[in-house]
Amino acid sequence: MALRRLIARMDIKGTNVIKGLQMEGLRVVGPVEEVARQYFTQGVDELLVLDTVASLYGRDLLAGVVRELTRNCFIPVTAGGGIRSVRDADELFDAGADKVAVNTAALQTPVLIEEISSKYGSQALVVHIEAKSARDGAWHCYFDSGREDSGREVQSWALEAENRGAGELTVSNVDRDGMRSGYSYDLLSLVASQVTIPVVASSGAGRASDLVSVFQRTGCEGVAVGAAFHWGSFTVSEARRALDEAGIAVRKEPVGSGS
Amino acid sequence: MNVGVIDYGAGNVVNVLRAFEAIELDVRVVASPQSAADVSHLVLPGVGAFGFGISSLRSSGMADCLIEYFNANRPILGICLGMHLMASEGTEGGRHPGLGLLPGRAQHLMKLGELGEGVRIPNTGWAEVQWEAEQANGLGNDLTHAYFNHSYAYRPEGEDEVLASSRFGGHTFAAAVRHGSCTAVQFHPEKSGWDGLSFLRGWVRSTLN
Image (cartoon, chains in turn red, brown):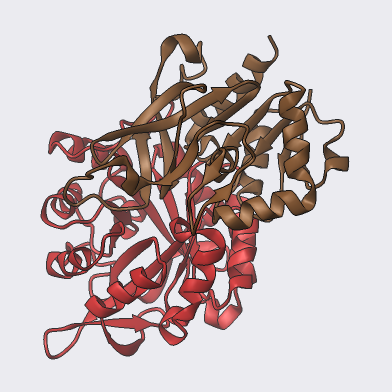
């Protein structure tokens, strides 16, 4: 069985990795290639690259970024941000992406999910859900980098995404993103229980023990860690050690890596 | 020697190309039999639908080219969808004849049997690869874990040699097989870190004896 996945999440603007708080405000972490190389060297399982301002600058930058960072990082890369068509996806796969992630365009035109997955396979398509809790206690799907409420509830959207051919869901939490104060396990359990495809948890890791909790308390198979890695809350090594000590099956630290 | 990575519109070419470049082998993209003419090693990568893949290989002439290579005992490596396309048959979206370089068939992971609770498909992530020491003959020395991302698996038919297996949902499936001059792997060596690159080097080396 595949081991639990430790993913380094990199939100990018231009050619820099940035990180905001609750998806607002942007602090620069460093140049994408450099940051990606570090995470690869430190032994993460995968990279998740999300272009946060694609709607403003266009996606051409993202393909260029993916092309450069896949030169030296021989681990899977998921790329997303502003993908509106199969052609956009083509560009990213040609640049070296293993998977593409869609959100905004998929909510607006759900058939995009079928289009991309029928060409590249479900295993190549991630639907990224940006969840935010609504007044009535429900979880809504947001888009445009967590700014706009689509009105859709996460459960029904998750199920629809799977039915249309998504091979994976990544769940971010707009209110917890970048805050390093833990995950909403209710949200993650809710989504994971709706679908039979793998679910990756994002937004909230502050301590290595948070990752342990995700795997113990929800059906998620992966965690995408952004702020905690960028700002040094814990290292990739420490994350692996915590998971291993808790009896969670993860890849051993690859030989030649170090934090 | 040189490596030709087949581009038949089913993606995955760039990463495989980069991986061979990283281990400093002479490598290029090949899209037609003419461009494959002077290539010593062929690699068939790929992701996506079986039907699309096989028809694309046939219409470009690369299907015949691969069969000729195989009959001439020249080395071929299939990766992921490439492995499935080499089978005698694929079962995605109906039954499609494959290239027939490997005697088995590609089947959905659900066909492995009762999968147990909470098992999710696709099989995505790093997993242990168990090498059959004798058959593999050192091929898997460095690659104890590799990256997998698939919903279908190749089921051997008995004539092929199973070099390695991995596990999913409580069942074993073929992670690496060999038949004649054709070696095929379910995992992605080009995405399995430095050890994956070592595997590629090892594969090439194993064909030079």
